View 1 (cartoon, rainbow, N blue to C red):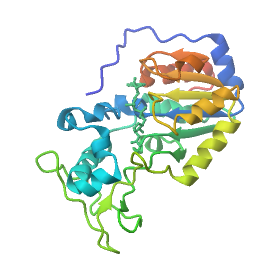
View 2: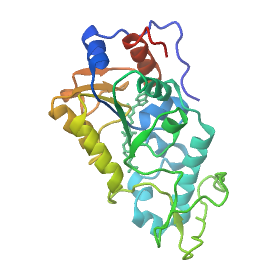
View 3: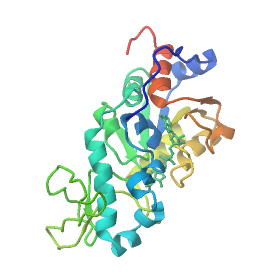
Length: 267
Ligand code: OAD
């Protein structure tokens, strides 16, 4: 269960320079990671290896070799995650990003997440850098396909589930996500780079900023002189180049930030 928000806690305060920068921004790039979905009950990427999967290393599950070695184990892990996503709801952090898009001149949303919670909160995502769990493809012929029944099955015994077969070539269906060692989707990458080259303000939310090339996106914008704002309860690898580090959960910080920057316009 996501943590209870402490209603008695004072709302976060923001420097007026930060609020002015947001109000005057020409092009805001919002870059998100697994932390933005944490308050929806979706474990962050590195937490997703707790519980059932505690004894696995991501490299044992999120690679083409792992899928070839044991398709049922890898497909079972992703179906477990897809089921969690289907049962989850967007949280106030997702919704604040959708609201922000209505108040700034231009907002580009780039995510590393494979869930659809941004879209379900009303956002347009210009790039899913690591693919989408809801868009499986055939491991053999690469054709996009669909889940046999759009109802994720609980992997039997909580872990192994044989993947369905491709209707065209009979190959095994794989999750439509980017695995370690695989290239990022070309179109998504070029949209993200375009935004990184043009944005004058970047809000990086809920990412450890450890995984490249995705982490290049906020880094490139910051090195060009864009104002980099980090939203994360913990320190990240990007802190040294951030103009502002807002320590706290996205579901608390983002709604407060949008309300503080655009009070008259309402949510
Ligand atoms: P990580 O699990 O590496 O990092 C999640 C980040 O979210 C951490 O920095 C947490 O401190 C932060 N966090 C936790 N709860 C939060 C909250 N309520 N609000 C805000 N932040 C919170 O996940 P990512 O950085 O997204 O790639 O990982 C990036 C990529 O690494 C993933 O897309 C995945 C993995 O390799 C692929 O699967 C290809």
